[in-house]
Structure formats: structure tokens, C-alpha cells
Amino acid sequence: MRKKVISFLKGKVIAREENSIVILTPSGIGFKVFVPYPEKIKDEIFVSHVSDSREQNLFGFLTFEELTLFEKLIKLPGIGPKSILSLFRYYTPSELYKAIENKEDLIVKGVRKKILKDIVNFLSKDIEESYLKEDEFSEAVKVLLSLGFEKDKVYDIVRKVRRKKGKELKVDEIVKLALKEIKNEGK
Image (cartoon, rainbow, N blue to C red; front, side, top):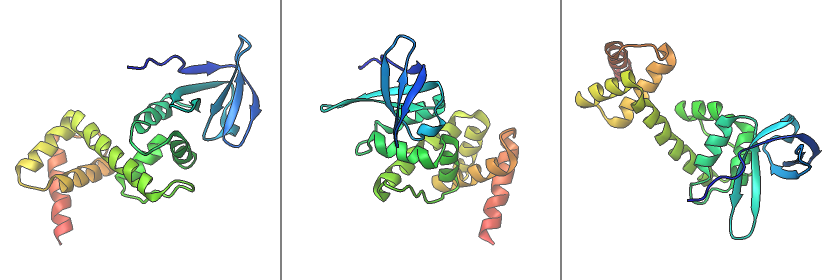
């Protein structure tokens, strides 16, 4: 397993290009870092070191959340780091997850539809897993599945209830609201 050497840089931005910056650290070393939004980078940046057989590059982000999502997506076959940077020019991680939850079509200039579809499929599973990790929602999903409802429909309805009513619900409240939603959809 490859260990990460650099995860964060602090210094002065001494150059900006269309998709990269050069940050000079106090030790006098300048690092070229590819970023989704060079104009927003100040003096600190989270970075991911990506290497392949041809080159080694640093990719930088304003938030740890972006770095974490980048490192998840970079593992997907056929999805390169520059496609992910393009995606981040249009969406923050929370906007991206929200768009996927709302089943919105992602449109990103310079990124093929197939790549976007792969990202959506991957993150949809990530979203489903996050619901399963939250006890009340997990239990509500189990109850609804035991009542014979389809898995996809259950996740959609539970997401809808969560968006409308928030996270602070008890299992019985989630189930009641979900059943009400299912009933309303049947009309």
C-alpha cells in the first residue's frame, strides 16, 4: 500500500495559471499544484499526490471534504484527476451529493457523460451506505423492506422524508411518513 507523503501545504501562492498554482513554502520549496479554482486559493491547501507510470502530480483543494471525495473518486477506473477537478469547478461535495440525491442530471463542461454516470452510480451507493449507517434511518429502511417494498423505492422515499423533515426523527415517525409518501405516490 502506498503511503501519502504530502497532505497539506502552507505558504505563499507565487503563480496562478488556468488550472494550477505554484505555492512557495517557508522552506523555500515551490510546489506546482493542480486545482479546480486557482483564484480561490490563498495560503493553505489540502493536497493529494497522484502518480502513474508517466508523471507525478499534486492536486489541491480548499477543504478536507473535497480532498476526501477526490481520493474516493480517483480510485474509479476510467476517471482521471483532471475530470474530477472539472467536476469540482461546478459542484462542491455537498452540492454534488444533493444533486445526486435529487436525481438531477450532472452537466460538466469537458467531462464525458459516461464518466459522470459512473461518478453518479458510485456516489449513489455511497449515499445509500451513509443512510444505512444512521441508526434510525437504517431501522426504517429495514422495516419498509420487510413490508415488501422495493429497495430502490425505499431508499428514494427515505431520502425524500429526510430532506423534508430532517435527521432528527424516530424510526416510527420515519416509517409513518414514508408510508404516507408511498400512499400519495399511488394516487
